[in-house]
Every structure is written in C-alpha cells, then in structure tokens.
Length: 244
Image (tube, rainbow, N blue to C red; front, side, top):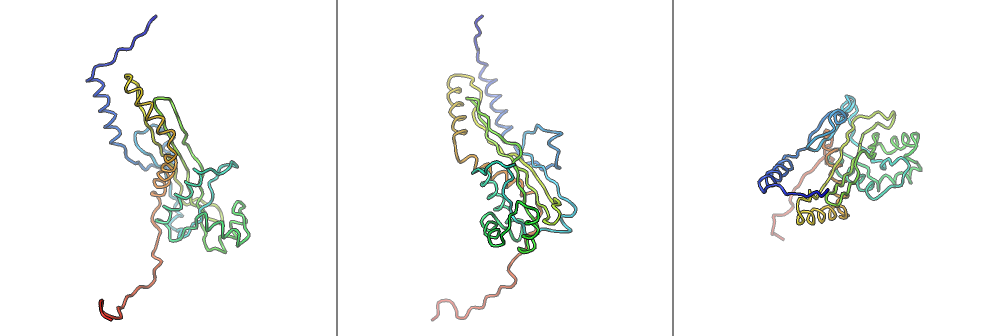
C-alpha cells in the first residue's frame, strides 16, 4: 500500500503558524503554591512553585551561605557551578550579605570545617555570623532531540534553611527551557527545522543561559531583606570646582 502526503491548503498552514506565534507571545511567568504543578503539570507559561514559612519573617535571613549543588554524590558539572553562581548573583539583590563559592571555600579552609557535616555547619554559622544556608538540588529538566525539533531544559529546587535546625524558611523550584525546530510540512521546512533543532542542541551557551533563567525566576519569589550597608555618608567640598 502506497501512502502519499498531500499538503494542507496555505490558509490552514498560515492559520496554524499564526496560532503558534500567538501562543508563544502570550508566555508569562506564573507563581504558584509549592506542589501546585503536581496537580496541574501542563501549562503554556513558565511556572515557579514557591513556599514561604511563617518563621521567615520571625527569623529574617540577612546573611546566607550558598552551599554546593546537591548532586546526590555525583560529580559537580559546569552546569551545576553555573546554577550555583547564578543563585549567588541574584541572592545579592535580596540579602544584605551573601557568601558565595569563593568566600565559602576560603572560610572552610580558615575555620577547618566541612559544610557537608551538620556539626561543622553549626560551628561555621556561629563563627561567620551567617546563620542561614542556601541549598540547591537538581529538579526536573532534561534534553530532547528529535531531528526536526529539540528542547533543552534545566530545573532546580532552592531553599533557605536555618543552620541550627535545618528548618526551611523558603523554598522554590522551577524548570527553564528553550526549544526550536518544527513540523517538516515540506522539504524546505524539513531542512530549516532540522537546522534550527541541531543549532539549539549544539549551542554551548544555551545551558549557561538556562542556568541564569532558572536562578532568576526562583530567587524572584524571595521577599527583599537587603538593607543598606552605608551607615553614614557626607560630602563637603574643600574648594569650588575649577579653583586651585
């Protein structure tokens, strides 16, 4: 039996393309309660799940130490480090003091502690006067490549916990993704879609961009606790400008 493909009318194809364009233009970021995505997994927009504990405001974190991404024992990758750095960068907009990977390693050496142990974390918190930790672990994400269509995605779950009892004061999770390609409706679109799909999957900058996206959308759900570190500022000119 011979099966032939008859292309649809140009009007139908144009309508379908317009519909996809409109859907893409309407993509928004939706902030929902933690766990809501389990009940409503399919969404046309970006979904960020988050939860703020009532104790967040009672024990407001002004200083946080960014812990390494919890990989479950697997080796850290470039993407894990990129997510950690992005979380540190955006946390600085929310917290007065942020101890990132570089400063954390320096303090670990000076204090002779290992932050993978709970007892050392407590000692570290007392000495550094930074009583909260930021935990990061992979969540969701993954890559798909189907010749004519490809998708890259990175997901993470981030939480702020107290050093003394590991109580989570805030947590959020999100998956950031990019896709490209399309349906091979004719020879030209097949070649073009295959090119776009391959270009996306082979672009080494995409994962780094996704790491930034996932961190930005997650940290945006944290109330701003940052306060000015400038206690006093005054300026008294000694001479008028332009005089000797």
